[in-house]
Image 1 (cartoon, rainbow, N blue to C red):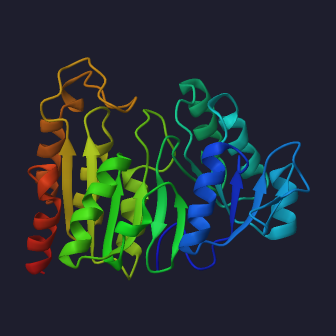
Image 2 (cartoon, one colour; image 1 turned 180 degrees about the vertical axis):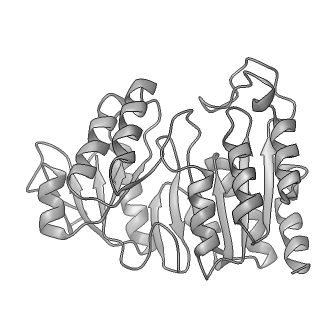
Image 3 (cartoon, rainbow, N blue to C red; image 1 turned 90 degrees about the vertical axis):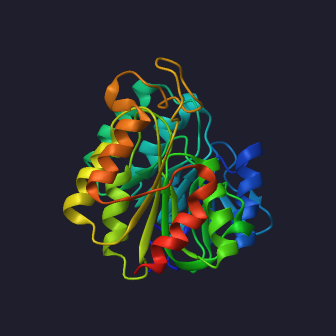
Length: 293
């Protein structure tokens, strides 16, 4: 089975009538995702793409369509409240694509999520895709993905696509690919996803892509050492990043020795992960690792 999403996923899109929301909703539907509702306040009663009903509130949409997953394209000043609205309506999995949410809002939202039974991916993440279940809730280019038994988790959306772009031509399909986002404060982290992949009977190995900034990779290394028996193939980007300069993501900044790529690589090596030397070697390193199983 896949993680976070599957054949029982009933997707609701918050911000469905905006430019990004409408474009990517169609792409999700084309891939096979069951998009059952959209939410845009003030536009309730309209129909999107001739089949998806639009509601004014998440609660109304969830009650009438049994939506269990939300994809958030709401502008940054309002995205935090949109996530909380989804959780209050009983949505089980919230995936926030929105970039640029104030850190203070993210802190409030993540604390709120921690007190619920819901799971949050993001903010500022590419979403999630399960090639076998044909479910996509995000903005990734679906044509590069193929069904298989390798799970992928990454802080970087672009590097997720690059990794899969190398894996698929080598015949290495994916069980689920998860983007956790690159913001300094976010929902589900590496440990949460690694735990689910470890329990997933349809995932044999895990590709984990980290980057400079924070200590999420070190926390993942500790978890891998004690709790993960499946092979973990890991790439850490930002080897040459200068201290104090933000590199792409808001969370990709070296502010201390623990934030350095070298520190993260050392921790993961010690935990038993197979280290990918450069982004160009994700596919071959994974192939060689699988050949040893």
